[in-house]
Image: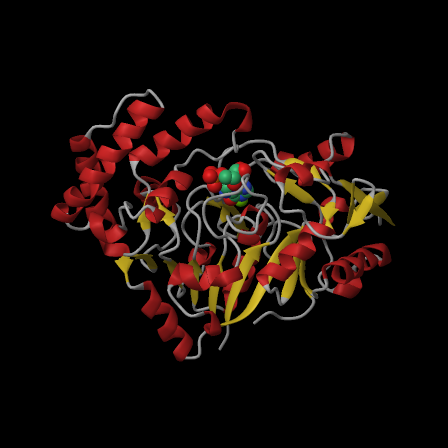
Length: 434
Ligand code: IMP
Ligand code: MG
């Protein structure tokens, strides 16, 4: 039975939570494999609206095992809080398993995240400030603290001592801020470890055993491929591997790339980005306002789930999207928020870039060149009628069908799923993914 990966195709917030919630119905195991609580998923179901940062979106179905893989940076305080909130709203969290190999976000990571952004000044990345970047820096520097280390005080002390000593030198020497107390840190994290203990387990075995038993497994990406450390718009990226390329998803839960059978990329019908960095199709006019505030009164406007920041808005960038289709090796596209375009008289898609008088159809690696590209647009007629009630491809107005078909052509990937509203059933399954 397939292991299916769901990745964000753009700069995050494409509606992965919603797609995962839909696909989770058929899965036995749902796993998060990357990022940390910089990510935010909004899920709307019969129990209400939930904003998740670490717990996989499969948690709302009883009988599903939800796992947080080794590739995720975990802030224990945030995770315990999220668990408590879910429990207080009647959601059973006993099926949650956290990898003992996952990295832990420590107090100095959060502090350094903020201090480093200040130091960068005008070149700030616009991070979410959750300490995820500095946590991955320590991981790569082989100074990181892992979930397994939280469970035994001797290990915790031994691991934190040199890591904090280094961090405090950085905090005081480079950033000129006050150091972090070792004893306070140990006391807090020792307690977190004890509270997390019941959830800690061997994620890899859970996934592989479910796979061998012939059950469906869903690997849930966070953020977007264009924020990928390797393939994204560097340096305005996140510090982990949101994409499925180079087996990011497999790496993040401890399985081989050959176990993955399909990769679904989630793309918005337009584009958004939070934080700084190039965004060729960005709009600053009233269309941007209109798209940002669509559904705002119900909390579905384009404002960050994690930080509340207004998202930057633009037309669908098919150059960036096709690049993302390629490096993720996507088997299918899930196109979300089609209904947000319902009122528009005309819809644009960027099909190429103009750079120094030349037309190009790939994303330049250089940040400064990417800032210079000018989008070449194709304009399609809008449908100017609601699509929120559509449940099959044939229910869509002809102009909306033409838009979807054109997206398929430009992205060179089939659109297997379309979402037309935030509710679970407001979706069109063009081809079943499981
Ligand atoms: P960091 O991941 O907090 O270090 O932030 C790095 C960049 O990734 C910033 O531009 C953030 O706004 C962006 N980012 C991080 N997580 C998400 C997410 O879940 N959705 C959208 N953007 C994100
Ligand atoms: Mg989000």
